[in-house]
Amino acid sequence: MNQGKNGNLSILFVCTANIVRSFMAERIMREKLRKARRKDIAVSSAGLLDLGGSPADPTAVRLLKEAGIDGDDHRARALRREDLEAADIIVVMEKIHKELIMERYPEFADKVFLLKPFMKGCREGEEDIGDPHGKSLYHYRLALAEISLAVEGLIKCI
Image 1 (tube, one colour):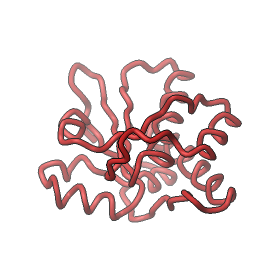
Image 2 (spheres, rainbow, N blue to C red):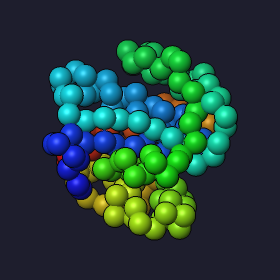
Image 3 (spheres, one colour):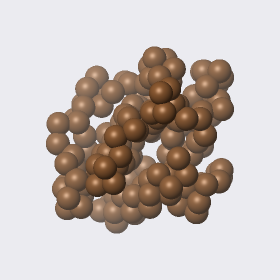
């Protein structure tokens, strides 16, 4: 993984709509970095779909709050070329996200990684974090747990 400009690193999380998974990953990572007093990493998120600034999924917000993480005031943001250019690392939730980014923007292929494999260390893999949107609370909790563990692994790898 590439180190950013001036020793700082910029990480962009991407999922389908930016209302559950990439949003949760962004907030979880920010909280973990805050607790570790790390100010050398900038974190953002975006979605492949343009939902026009829709609010975050209320179940995702509630679960983040239960974990002591602020999930308020998020608005979905569509992925833009400028986001990809600015990011040192682009972290996606599913293989299809990686494929779509690589198809639309092949020049950024070397910066795109799946999040879930970071649960098992600094390696690449093909495992997805499933989309819980519209599913049971179990699916939301599973996604939150996988994202949290994978973010911890990602922090160790950068």
